[in-house]
Image (cartoon, rainbow over all chains, first blue to last red; front, side, top):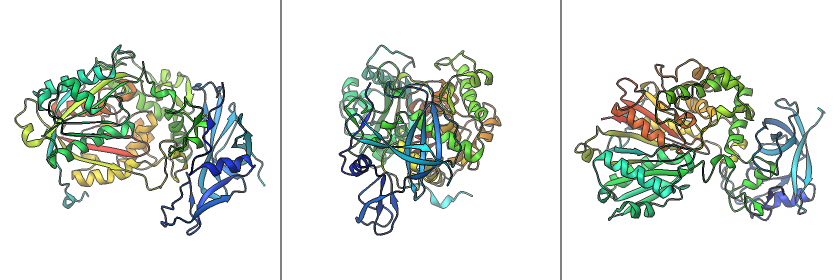
Length: 134
Length: 399
């Protein structure tokens, strides 16, 4: 069964997927107050500015939470798999999802490195793998 | 101390005067419109009213039965007010607020609030979020494109992440989650209409149940049910002339978390504090409006889509400190005879899942003294909804 492909042309989030296809991890931020805006919006609710744009992350994060999915829901995702919530090191207000096969041993705060999963249709999805400490 | 000066203008001005439910099952064999009709007729009969007395209908926005269809099916002749609220399980408590607003502003005299679903036989709520059937997922303001393609597709997986974070930060244990499941099952075992009636659950059975999405096991999940519930709301003044002892809507409040995160359920994982709930703000407003506090509640019907939901709300509504929900639940406080009996008919975990509406019905039963597992002399009850992405709450009072 085909994966659940993301809609990549959304006017608020399309750039995230476009960048991923270029091998870049980006997040939205306010140019006026520098607050990261995630999930992304064109308007900053912190300072009311419309001057917002995309910034590139260095692709390093910290593991915030995870769950091992043991009960399969969708044929595209055979159980067991592990969903991870990763907090960007250079923008802690941004947390992104990732998926690991199986049930690897993990610990809170673990260092994670982004990689880009190529999807069936040429789109890409930022994913995360455990990384060694610097 | 609660600020008595902050009296809520609507305090005790409206009342629930009728309650009705269908049977809760795994397969009703009937349409959701039929279920809604049956529950509504039962609620109207309980109120000593007929469909021609109804002029307002409020519903959950996820219901496939529209206010207009229900009114037509019932034979309501003078529908003049209707409204939707939500999302999902947040709806029932907010419906009490909508009904109150309509009545106190003169837009309606008698409002029917309902929820009807074939949540097991037709549209399984555990099957994932809507919109997974198309070629692409997310977009158009849903923000699901950040989550569904990874395999984060259910509420259970989302709450599992919250539960695991609560364990990391506060040391919450599997047994503490289990204490919530057992308290609800214990209530259901005393309640003949509960789907889990006569099915005792021990801690050993709980801990031995299969993992669904760690740390949440089978018995951490609510039921998926077919069924409907309805309640009738009118002014406190009119309520005095009706047959059942009125249960007053003391106060209603919704609340959103301080984080400004767009989207629906999944973006909770991006909140600075993943285990904080909109219910915390709802509670702060609710207690001010009600002029009473958590310690005054004789029982509580706490939205229990999952066991962790209860633990987080015990904290959010101020029954215990942040991080103390697990020990509070495990202390026995939430069981019948404890300081705060919760979900006295079994709740969503063991009575049935009517998306928050059966909690309203049970709160009213308790305050009328009609509970199967009746809390002695219950005068005040909390009912909560939600709890993601925002929270809703009601305090009911025996007139």
